[in-house]
Length: 70
Ligand SMILES: [Zn+2]
Image (cartoon, rainbow, N blue to C red; front, side):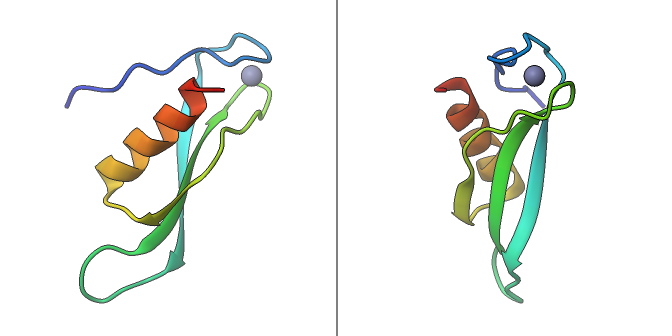
C-alpha cells in the first residue's frame, strides 16, 4: 500500500513518525469512533488529533495531514 508522505518532526527533525489510534466509542456495525494522531518516536512531539468514525486508512490519512500542516 502506498504511504502518504510524512514530514520530519518540526521539533527534532526525526523521520521516525508513527501513528497512534485510540478507540473512543466502539460500534458493532461500521467503524468505531476513534482518535488518531501522529507522533514523533524520537522526542514525543504530537500532531493534532483527528476524531470521528474513521477507517484505519482514513484515520491515518487525516492524522498525517494534520501532522504535515503544523
Ligand atoms: Zn521529534
